[in-house]
Length: 90
Length: 153
Image (cartoon, rainbow over all chains, first blue to last red; front, side, top):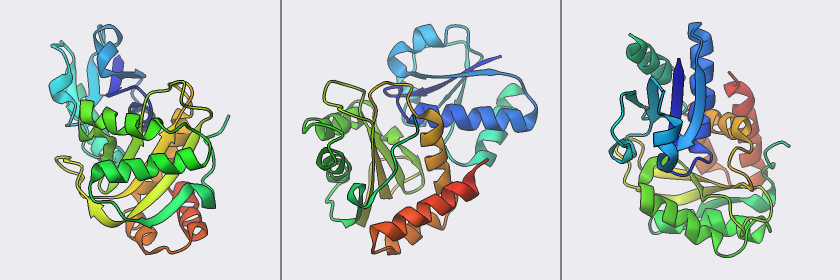
């Protein structure tokens, strides 16, 4: 399972999402490889990703992808991140 | 290397900002004054939001303003600004912004965990109003350190 957290420039915000997604997955007992990236290098970094995590503000900038795009409104709301990851993982 | 600590010199409380650009520039100006970045960095922080939108508003009331690493970043830096009057960044869910954290890093993957722990402090909904009421930087730093310790997950 590969998950990519996306932000505009790959500094800070995507890192927060990556760390909080890893912690949510650990609580859920799900194994996954979570990385952080920026929109510009998404086509390479998310080529084989199952899930892309991002902000509602960036969805329009994501190029066409096979991955599920999971939009996180509040990056520090652990319940929201857990719930949306669970939904995406079916 | 740990995330730089907030100090009385890198916390500015009750700053006046007319709009989001002003608010971001204040957070950047504090980084300039602290010696972390050169004078062009605050404008680069604004340009990131002009390019990509208000995604930097990562939680209700909280913006994490930063630019890419560059030659104008002398050293990793962290600043905290509370606004006298909250401003809108144009985010669908998390406006208005009361608190801006300014970040400068010399490499893209630096301090990811430290930044996340700092951000997670804001999972406590009482933190933003408490910071808004703080009148001394030392009080604001104490509030954040206590919330960071509580927010550790």
